[in-house]
Image (cartoon, rainbow, N blue to C red; front, top):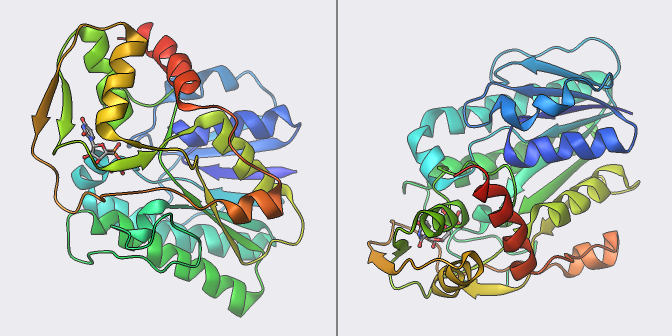
Length: 311
Ligand code: UDP
């Protein structure tokens, strides 16, 4: 198959490119390097099945030749990044989604949209199943991301309903692993960096808020299954690891795994920071036969190893 991946130089995008190439597909990667980096894909350039185009997907988009699958994964995903680039975040998940959906229609391609657990906002239902509608502040600082993702989901479904486009939406919960930007501001890169440097780990609030962390290889397996399986048009899947931890537990784990002598400092909690988050992955288990295999300890060990060489 010939596959177009936007956000190809990002953390998840670069792993996805690798996966599709490994399965023998041809991959066209697009990225404007707003938060992604050429380092993530440099090793793919010698692969004759890989083409890279430096491009901002919010501009009119056309690619020559057939395309079988489009995966729209371009978008800043760390709260720090999307609050630093609020307007571009909204553009890439509105105009960028429109452009990629238009291209999918033109090519008769299957379309996979990278959505997020943030569509559930600060959830009132726990754990979160796909049919929960969410609790999002439409004018808060996170809304640039949450509402753009929700708009993109609606637009994706509109193309499915009006044009019969074969679309699938993946709602990605917190994911971590090699190739995250060490300074992207998310909790795992922050804590690992701080632990390796011997600096105090910055826990926001009292640290009793929870997240469920999925190792990148598990996530990519889930996305790949959603992308290649027949008969999933119009379906939405939560993808994430249902093991839930408090942020304080995470901090202690990272101190232990790195063997660091860092302490912990408690800083102000960001506005609208969700209190709890855990995916209900019943649907992915049943329909895709998928579930995560890498536990947090093992995943953190692999991630720390990667970061150690770069800090
Ligand atoms: N967090 C923290 N210290 C940090 C970075 C994040 O305590 O240095 C907390 C943050 O307040 C949130 C959780 O960790 O409760 C996860 O934050 P992250 O930015 O990784 O992603 P989110 O899940 O909020 O999108």
